Image 1 (spheres, rainbow, N blue to C red):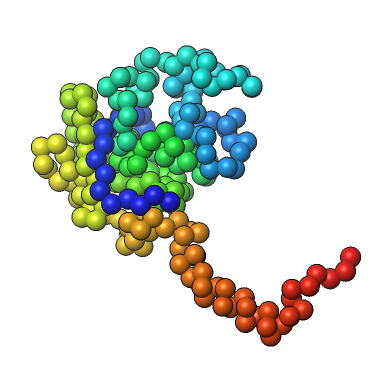
Image 2: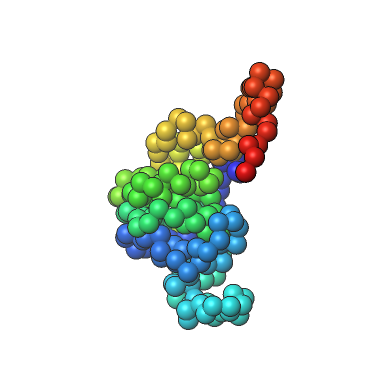
Length: 216
């Protein structure tokens, strides 16, 4: 998992409340558990002018010019600004996969659905909760200034606006530790790889029959 320390990026606004995970990555694209290839279908029903057909080449689809992520001013955006209760609905982990693979590193909203919030941290995304008034002000500023960007400093736990104003945010220490070091659940376990190997070797030495399969 990619570590997160300080990130600066253009902000893209999703000005809708209660965006659910089926809007983030629709159910027809959940056939794979491989953690790749989902970015092209992020917000699929909003991004494209027509529904996807089974077997259709994704590169042949017409983008919806009215959708925010298709507008030139938001190309390359890596900070997603959202309204309250972002990520509600099902618990599909494909939702943060799609967001991360599209190119986003941080999300800012007044609130997130709990399971989605937890899944973000496990996949290298930083979901930031800010007061609703601050988020509303950010929406206004993003609309007013093309190329509006923010700096997210996880170590200091602040979002820095272009004018230098800092917006502090909270993050649990363990989650912060994992993001700063790029540790997902597997990475955390692998820190103890030598102890695990030593335990397995000792167990086989004292109970060698564990290495053999039972007949039948």
